[in-house]
Length: 263
Image 1 (cartoon, rainbow, N blue to C red):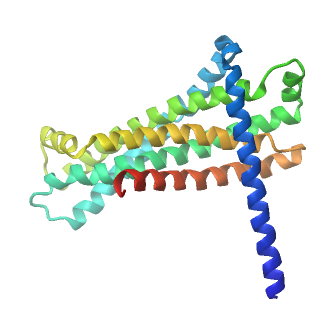
Image 2: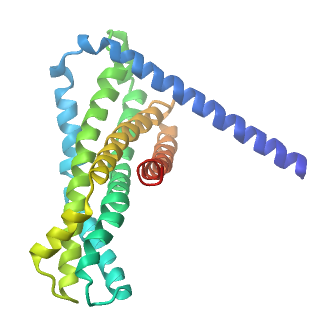
Image 3: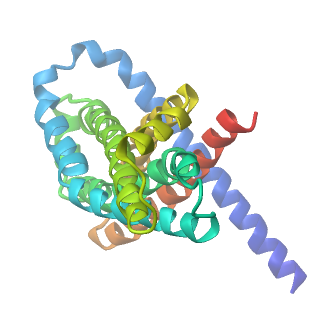
């Protein structure tokens, strides 16, 4: 039994090592491809950037706003049940900034994008590979890494960063509206407490999370999208893309928070 466990553990560790090494080589190949960026016509990738930005950002606005409104309200409900009603207006700004702006806003936005756009990207690339579209582009001399992956990274960075800002604003509004049902807080007082609670570090940390999410989500999704060798493997690798990207997003969120707020 112990021998079987050791063999399984060793094989899993070796599999993880090979996967990390393969992904590292994949990332290096993309970085090396950027040297040819000056030869890439912006017009050739313009439509990809626009369409991906629309799908990732604009089309996700409604669900992002609904979830932000609900989360902002939930945070305030929990706060109001724990804090005394007298003087609560002085704490709501800090609570929303700490919970929403620093943690829940970026992470929830990333999870929404992964479930919508990450899976869609992996599926689209898988179908393109299975139908030999990618092979056809390579045969006529097109750098598929630049043409396929690079514009999706640009679009994701723009979309996710914008969605994080919108998520925070809507969550703040939701928190304020919910707080009004329990204790009256003038709008100007609430806005001032939010402004006073925000620091330059909060803004920088949120933007850095948005940029990192914008790079890692399409990067990992495209990586697994290029893996299937048959149409039967497409759902397997799409599932892996979503799960791995979720894991990486949570780790990134934790690391950036630790870097900015604990070190």
